[in-house]
Length: 363
Image (cartoon, rainbow, N blue to C red; front, top):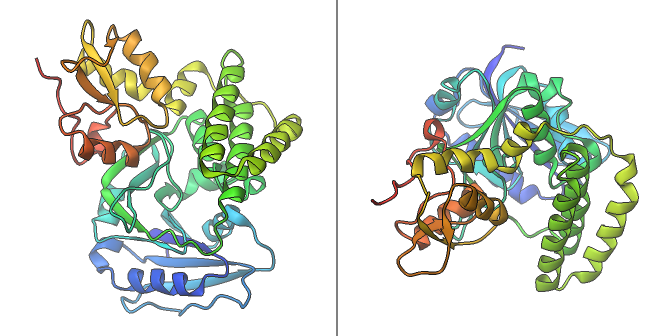
């Protein structure tokens, strides 16, 4: 098999219409966007009836369909990765697809120490996909170098779906790699509702995040991290009226923690994983010492941002004269908040891999 700049990896289960739409959109992409010998690998996660796909798309991109007799969840991506020979694996869901952008050229320019790149993921509403962190990608719109992905074991099959990207990114960081985001890569996530049960989703998020915390959190931080995660999902469960699913998941998490191997990150690696290092770097440039800071657009990682403001010498307050600072670390949520709060400071920005720099602090 000839090597390729990139391969699109798409697991699918029982959503033939969504898979067909994704393949149609891939087939409409310009060859200049796709690089050398692009291919698509579809992994059918035991669909009924079986998934179907053409062998070539209209733009001449080859398609390989691999059938699994069992639903492998996100770990089906591992099967797709092993089946191709590409520098980069572009991870899609069967209801997500890349928008026109310089996909292959951008990945060819990636620094050698960069293992995974998250793109800007836009929903049909115009909002961006929530989730992720400065060094944690979102699985339906990202690119991962094939070599470290496979060498480190790919996605853990035990996770099924949800938080498997956190587990992978923790291993990439521990192995000496960087993870970044760039608006040069852009994806649409149609977020089909078929097959989505929020109670089941929340249950997997609780259990899988508990596993990630237990595996990778330094001993001095693990209890606080676990309490914070459980409290966050308990609030979400109450708001979405899936309290029973939360209670069952919390019990399962506690029951299965002993099965999880402890391999804690160093404190410096942990700070990168939770986004604290990216925030600290941004605040060094912003020089918040002695400034009044008002947090807006609160979301994931707001506690990390609060602690970092205080450590940088800033004063948290609600004064109308305070500088506004967006209080979420998730890349999509941060950009959405930036549109709601014009002029607000961003809590982190990777200058090399952001299309737009963070705004400077007014004097």
